[in-house]
Length: 329
Image (cartoon, rainbow, N blue to C red):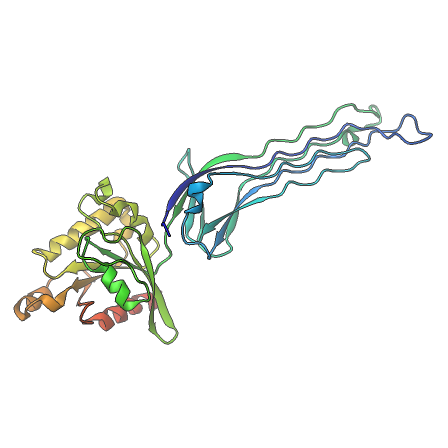
């Protein structure tokens, strides 16, 4: 299934029904009073978070949503029927913005969260509402008011506890395939991962967490280079960042700093999250280089763990460290 994490839609709530102009016409009462009923409210547009959805793909094919118009009032003081609300279902983790102003309207994180994004118009009052001692036969009624109309941008941010960050082909997909049930595409060339992957890690009995593998970053990603900038948003909600740095790199510390700078340039808050460095592909490193690598200091409070997803080295230690961080909050 194609993964879509941003969509633009237009929504229009229903108009309110018009009030009715009517007078009683009963036998033996030739000049009955006003009995025009009120118009009904128009239907609203409601955004609803649904855990069964995991992409905004549906909005690629349907971009316009309208709610029903409220019915007009009728004679004999009969009000109209309210317009039916239009429920727009989105994945949990969807952020809704006003497309024109760019302002965040609502962030729907949990299953069942919902928000009225466009209110239906009010129904107009019938002439029965305007009768007074001095005007017992009003020949006017109110029209219904228009429903709200908006242009919206939907942004999906994955809900994960841990985000994997690294250059293309750093081993993120291999790691997530080994420690979770996720089965991402894996190959020995850059940008194998073209969409984010989520994996559930069952660390121990009753202890589990969700890990997100996003397409690799490259230097200049925050300026639109490569693919990573499209997906950095998916680690904004994570609590821990695991930087996968290749142990066979010429300068692992420089690689880490480039990645950190890209995150900070996109959103400074991301770079402030708890960080762990996993030195990958240690199965191909000789003992002399291994000793040098584990001595590298990547930053204050940043733990370094040598791993090999292929050989299974260091994975338990990595998961233990991740769980310690998650368990503190």
